[in-house]
Image (cartoon, rainbow, N blue to C red; front, top):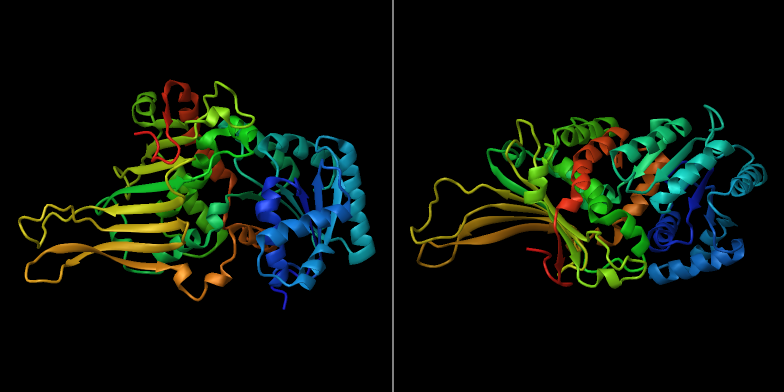
Length: 471
């Protein structure tokens, strides 16, 4: 049974042969198709500058999916491949958009016999957004069919802009093409199962909410470590850097989920508004604070990477402390840290509670008795809590114990959808809960942009690959 919209839908992917399409999008679309989550009538139109036709693109997609999806039925994959079409062209060339319009009209007339939904996915570097938005505007491709049939939506990858000024300029341009309800700005970390679970964990249980504040929490650390380097993405990374790549979006969105107030209801507007309020309340860092407390690093060997400048000053690591200036959180440090070529592959949110003023323990016990709640996002998704218990024996000694839940240990492991499956599925359904709003993007850039302006005043510290970053 199909669980998605019954309306015919065409998904148009800009950058259909790129890294993101290969690693994430094509496997995610196939999973959605095979599990019945795509509309019954779906066409996928791939666009790139590679010289392919529909037949060679289908062979390309088959190879990609066979490499990454280990368990699949051959006949199901063959059926999925029949939904794929392809056009080649330069994204700044208006001729490509004329061909797109002709192809979409032909599919509607030939196969669907009505005006279908159109989903435009920009799986391209942010530097290409301006060209694509301009050409989409001139071509009229973004105009919906009408009130009764055929919506039009756009999926935009992060980072959205390079700073507050460029983000606002992009928003103005998007605003001429789409209404806010048509714009889906992707932060795929919001679509991860455990990140979604933060809202349920906090607000569906009475256990933690009474102590979820400055009176009981000592600090929060949000860590995003990657073991690998920039790989083939040197030119992209040179233009972006770690703070723009993951700090302005992934880490701040996780902070917002941890710090937000109860949205009361599970609705997109309520949850996005609660996240936005937290981002609006981030305390700006002064120049002195930036120079004194922000750490900026680059792994040894980065400058020898492909398409990286020989004297590059681009950071591959950062560590900074944010403060949420409201009654609940005032004074609690939120430590944000991310780096490439680190000692481990891990993404986690660690909430450390304050030590009790008194301890029913031996006077000789010098341990710091703090409870630590960890929300694990990678490599294994789950939640764990460190608490203190009496060690078995004649003496009254305390030792840490862990209560935990990991998806890999449950029967649901095989059913966990990827973040990009959730992104695509929710966009088709029109659910914006896990997508960032215009106001959230602006608030995040208001906090990050002053740091970027004084970035050159923060020493760039070289660190060893496989280490824990600069000290």
